[in-house]
Length: 219
Image 1 (cartoon, rainbow, N blue to C red):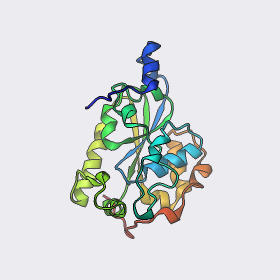
Image 2 (cartoon, one colour):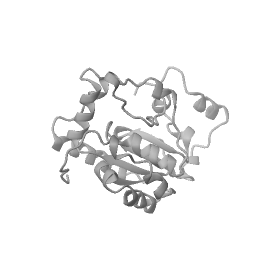
Image 3 (cartoon, rainbow, N blue to C red):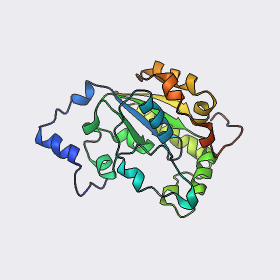
Image 4 (tube, rainbow, N blue to C red):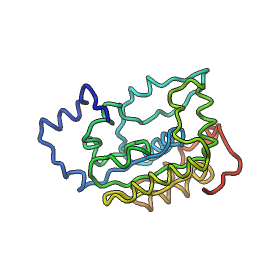
């Protein structure tokens, strides 16, 4: 991976203070992972409102394009900076917090103790969401061509992440969140996320389910 040219301040401070490389194994760090446009930002917002402390860079929201007035994530992206994410110690500066990562990052995180919610969405809905951003968006570069390839790719990364001795993973469907938010967040709480399910569920806005496949098959 390409290392950032300027380490984030959080990691500079870690280095100055001789970090405990095993600190992450003594506290649980909570993750939201998945493919872009699969509901990871929605889930981050809900879990943060439900009581978890989220680590993110608000400045990232200011760099997001909203073509033709289409607002991608009205409540924010909840993303850390690229420099932060590319640091070889990532996410050591954020142990114990709620962090958003893409599916490919799960296998390369620093050793710790993780619980992860992995978002799955119908690939046709993901494509529809990308199309709303405009065909020229760099975020539309997909590593799959067919719906079957999407599900296979996600399953492979979930399996690889689940093989880590320091990670527990829960698959959550985007359509399930929208259909029954309270039941979904109760399931996430029971998985080990210390949240208030009613508070988290109250953030889910059906009006933001703007790209919908009516019948979502089980992969």
